[in-house]
Image (cartoon, rainbow, N blue to C red):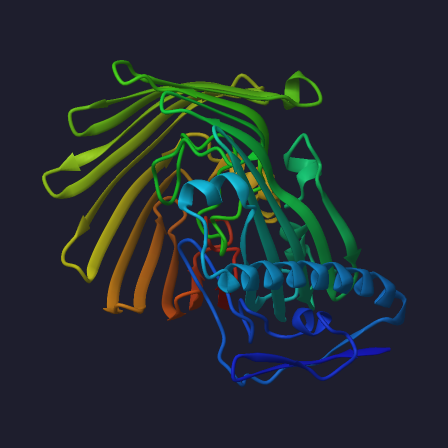
Amino acid sequence: MMLIKFRKINGTFLKTSKCSIIDLLSTKENDKSPCPPIDKKDRRAAADGTESWRFVISKEKVNNLQKFNNLLLICVITVLFSTSSLYADQNPPTIETRETDNLQISGYYKNLVNSSKSSDTKENIFSDLQRLRLELKKLFNPWQFYLTLDNEAVVNDFANTSDFTIVRSKIQNQLASWDLDKVSVDNDHLYLKHSIYRAYVKYYSPQFQAMVGKQAIDWGRMHFYSPLDVFNPPTAIDLEPEERVGIDAINLNFSPESLAGINAVAAPGKNDEKTSLGLKLYKTINTYDCALIAARIKKATILGLSFDGYIQDAGFRGEITHTEDDNKRSFARVSAGLDYNFSDKLYFLGEQFFNGGHEDNDINAFTSSYQLSAQTLSIKKNLTSFLWKYSLTPLVDLSLTTIYDWDGKSVMANPQLKYNILSDIDLIVGSQFFWGNTNSEFGSYQHRMYCELKWFF
């Protein structure tokens, strides 16, 4: 048997066992434990001196873990070496020279811990996600090359329940045509996944841009439910809404100053039923950014429009789509929202969503499948969402998100605290509370608590 233990003291990670980097995997890491973190919108972290916890890994998995250790160790050494080289350079080149000659390395280490109850047994369950992401960027004007590598570990105690199915469903062989991730360990308590998260080449000029490869394509304007986000939409209650499986596509954008912009996307699949195509026309009219889209997303045909502008000092936006799926079912989706800054400290956002394509015949399938939840967007038809944010200090933000299901009479409430500990370390602590009947939007979910620590480098 193998004991893994880790402790962070005064910002330094100390090993207390033989497993080097595994110490990070078995404890509370940057994201939710002792290691530093990062995030676009939400950030979560832990404190120095936090006690580590122990986890026993079966002997037959030690070899797999050692391989993962070695890979993580190589990545960390690469990052540290690159960072130290940058700081050691007393005469850095100009921006133009750096962009052309140097390989830019960045990324983050995240530790996301959450606790809830199993929807099967109603017993307490726990997971600790730890992710090391390396982002590599090389510029040769006008060409840009991007590569993002992920190594991810999920330590958990509910792998044999249906609750873990949603984690396993976020893999590229189900969601992308170019399968570039590998699950090396999937046992009762440990899930290890390694992936090429993004990999694309970009050509840039002021009027024409082209991107080819694994990328994120977001046509949506809404914060919660976005009908126009047709390629890789997030779910409204996901703890990591910014983490989306990339789409393998050719993405062309032509935007002459005197005309409307044109964005064409082609995402080839193994056959016609797996292929996605899209065309977007966009133009700024007065104070509004307007867009029209036509898309064939696998077996569904989608037409839509969006606008995003202002009513006096308030932001006003909306999206409308008409979809015909492979069963010849036609339906509309409509989302409208308003946001306003009451002061430098207080921000408000409200959105209303109508989903004519809702599907509540199999709620368990919706809650356990990332692909199905992204396609269907919601179980019920009418949802109202609110977000309040208050800046307690320049470094501390409080927020409250609520979503109300008018048809099923259910509600989700998500209070959260975000603390920018250092310029490159963020901590997020929050809870998600769900109330409602079983046959409602949120009634089948269990309350959960989470903490995320993110360290950007």
